[in-house]
Amino acid sequence: MMQPKPSLVEITAENPEKKSLPERIYAELKRQILSGTIKPEQHLREKDLCEQLQVSRTPVREALNRLGNEDLVVFRPHCGYLAAPLSSERFRELQDLRLIVESKVAALAAVRATDEEIAAMRQAATMPEINPGEDDSFVRFCQANAYFHLLLVRASRNSMLEGIVMSALDVYQRPAYLGIGRVQDRTKPSRRHHEIVDAIEARDVIKAETVMAHHVIGGSERIIKSLIEAGH
Amino acid sequence: MMQPKPSLVEITAENPEKKSLPERIYAELKRQILSGTIKPEQHLREKDLCEQLQVSRTPVREALNRLGNEDLVVFRPHCGYLAAPLSSERFRELQDLRLIVESKVAALAAVRATDEEIAAMRQAATMPEINPGEDDSFVRFCQANAYFHLLLVRASRNSMLEGIVMSALDVYQRPAYLGIGRVQDRTKPSRRHHEIVDAIEARDVIKAETVMAHHVIGGSERIIKSLIEAGH
DNA sequence: CCGCTGAACAATGTATACAATCGAATTGAC
DNA sequence: GTCAATTCGATTGTATACATTGTTCAGCGG
Image 1 (cartoon, rainbow over the protein chains, first blue to last red):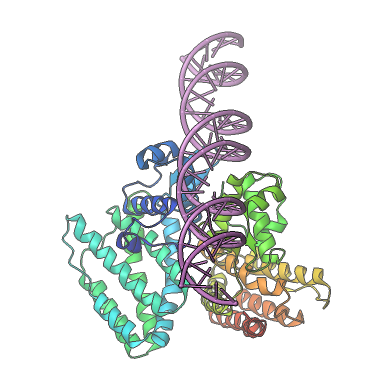
Image 2 (image 1 turned 90 degrees about the vertical axis):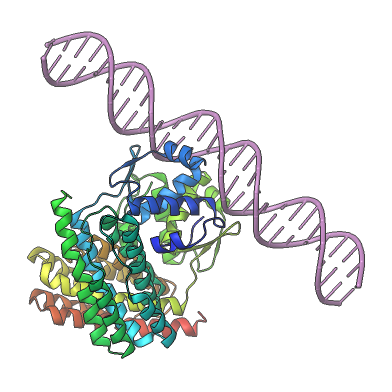
């Protein structure tokens, strides 16, 4: 029925054949919502989803339930489901959360990461190219970014933190997938990532925390501004 | 179907009649799991729950789904559900999380709380008596504690943080409800609470954060020790 | 006596039928 | 012409029947 709460980077990575029906539907709908295939505030009808996915309502409802628990769909009794709206207010809350959690996660990682984990982070720190206008390159950029943050939070050895961080990152990247507030240049995130790995490698707890805080704040203001300009 | 994620203190507070069927079942099962009526690792059969609650499997499954998303029940395909086990390892993760989030929540509250909110916190800061051996008095103590932390996180003006903090507090208090690692004396938590309110009232961000960090660490070590002694 | 295999059983997974409720549209009155 | 009320339709809420799968226990063979 359920169990792990895969983030977008994990959904696209794993082969979808083995999991249960509600699992796959959940993953598919999550992918479509976060990537923009299903647009914010788009009305979702159970029957439509059933026909589209060729299953009955039961597993669809189960998937929608799980998405509702993560606030990726909004539910109103007898009125159906809405894909989660984009709101600058909610995004501000998200920025608070990421700033609080991820900076401390970096600090924990500086204490707990093994040499192997640090090496893996180093390898994942460099972001791929972005070709403005080519959507695929941006998707790859977002996936690489999510993967770096995934490695980092796993090095903090705390599955609860992992769930919170990756779920927040999913929602964080949604505006970008919709073309709102995209970064233009891969070099700045790459540089921050390497600085973070430097600090962790040096076991410098304070620096890891500080640099991560700057990294999180970095992109957020631009995205919030773009969200407000776009009328959210 | 779903929507808010009520913590234990909210479940016992609200009158249960108005909500939808799955909502009430969810709340009831959550209450039973957290309060120990349903014991850790107890096997839950859908059919039993249906007969016990006099409803069909559909709303029961929906409730179990939501509980699974919060890791209050564990699910194995075709094998049924288990009430979440007590694990000292998981409790350690919980302590990490609470330490990270709640200390920063206190800092945010010191910036954002209104005078009315501070007054309400002051009133809620004093904990009720504990009579060892009388379970009711301890339940009231836990509820009062949860209520104080609820007021605090609401003053931080961030619904995502509220969800995380209250959910963590629910799980945090579960060992206590089962009689594991209970505090013996109300005065120490009361004193910490008042110190936190003092710091917030003085808008002293650093002190609020520091005192809250000590408050969170305070009880945790004793509980973890007790958990290990009890074989979890 | 221990271990393996297979079949029966029990529990969950899925689909569908029926009930309840909300919303929208149409019709009527003012 | 506009507003309100009632009725009809569509969509979700719940229940139940059927399919699938995992488990367990009995019987057989080593």
